[in-house]
Image (cartoon, rainbow over all chains, first blue to last red; front, side):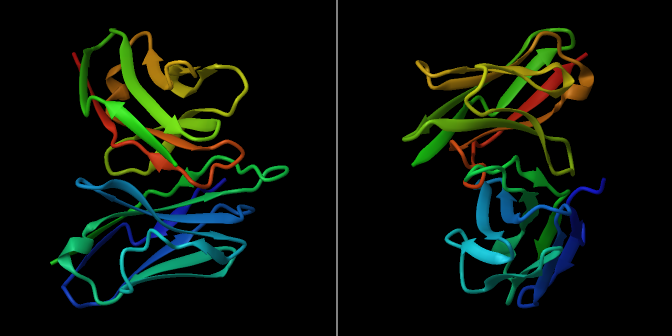
Length: 117
Length: 114
């Protein structure tokens, strides 16, 4: 059973360029999360979706960041224009809804290491 | 509001010694609590979780954690460290009934000495 898939695993780009990170959640999961991990701030939730609809984007740092989920098996996180301070590891995670309002464990992808020069 | 404090950003133990990683939480509602492990250049992997059933939770790789409401703690232990346990460990909290709003601690890097 495939886990959460992220691409690319590594991305190096120059300041000002557009960056697109991709995520394929586990099949059957209806929640998708985007996190950012840095040494200074640790793991931060950026945004999460339920049934392809963004529910909470309060963690998105600026308007330069945007996320979409066009269907249940694909999501993108885009940074335009990118800046050196965006350098971090970006994780995607997915989970499924359980009975009632409860939600199952989040399963994480391997991450995309972004370096903005 | 909820938060997690992990005491000790770096912990070193000898191979075969007890592993104890500390986690204290703050939550205005009954919490769910999680421990995740991150190996170098990999994503986070769930070790174990507490979801209001048994207070002593057993996880993978011989790890376990005990939920202590009176101490607002959820410390992670393993009786005998193995070299393969070297990794970063994260404690996380979410409101009960929802694993959506995970709040992570700052992580503890575990080093296992030969």
